[in-house]
Length: 510
View 1: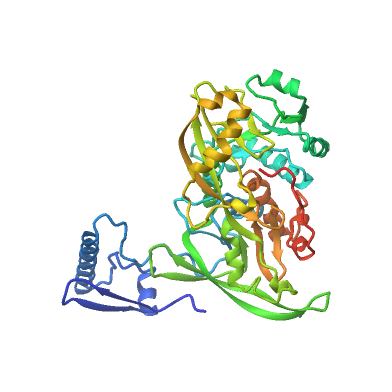
View 2: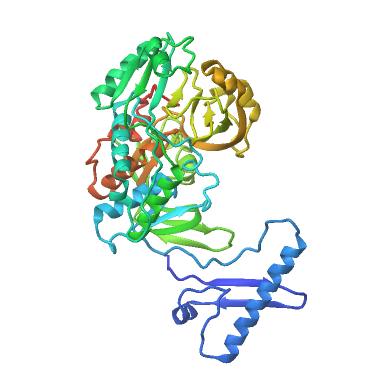
């Protein structure tokens, strides 16, 4: 497909005025990138005056449309001046923290500013629905799978030295506001044995964790009611919480400084070629290769087909939608093509509460055995709290509205029982965000999709994508540039486990 396209724009302004303008390849060669709301120097006073008049007419049209709809946020669709390039090497779909981490590590590994052309496409430039910035911002080592523990250890080491990695010359240093207060998991009689098994796995993987009896727990944190608690697990270092927005912007700022191209748009189509191949099990498979990514510009009729060699699906909660565009999951149920990418959005509420008499500066990120959690949020008796709903109670994902009754019924009673001071708390604000929830085993999916030989997956982290993003980004960059994992072996997170129906179940899901 040619990078030059014929663009026809028809504008209707005041009654009696109608103009049709056709901009062709010849004009593009003469004037470079074309933008309607911009004066174009043609060397002809008459033409210059014409374009100035056109600009004034268009401005008048916008004002009339805006005046006709008082209180409306609607604006006329414009021709975007920020089209992405027509050809790049790698397109990363998803400009959250995982996508920008991958972009950074790709550039860091190649060490050539003008090397691979990398485009990051993000449809939500304000990050109003981003899983990254709407999360609780925690990082922990207390997982049950060694792979997740190693991801945490590598990521926290990155965060400790973040300015060595993401510092930009003549820019302010990165301050993650990392509060290393540790995670505190509580176990009932039913969960005590699992906690002990997890503790052994964590220690063997290099994590620094301590088991506490109810008496020891009460001595360390006198404000806790230990009723029902048989055992507790407390992270001694490299655990706590940080500012997600700062980490996202640090990756983004550094990657752009290294030559990565940002784009605010939405991928609405993927153009492929298909080859029929026979698998080891003698199954005939239609294997696709993506040639073009169609990027629809925001608030505009304009779009750009972007030719590329590699696509990275880091679209988080909406990554399953991308693979559906390619027919993944729509084939016969007993075939590979009939297995969808098992990632979907799940809505989670986060409540901000105030309790002047609540726990102080030593407050950990506490996870009750019921699943209810809370942590300190700054100073002044502020905390954030929440819980993941039961499978049968999953809220509607068509919006990000907060259910305050959910807090009254599911969260507050547990908080007040575990910390008696929380009987007097007050909800001051709340928000909702999406998990990129892997319905198969609640763990990340990393690697090439078997039916799309140039699409790399980095999704399905089910709530721990933010904390693992530094290590995941490096691993995906290694897979792309080196052909295999170098730093951490994450091959067990491949799509292959879904094909073989062998889940990697994480027992410490929050």
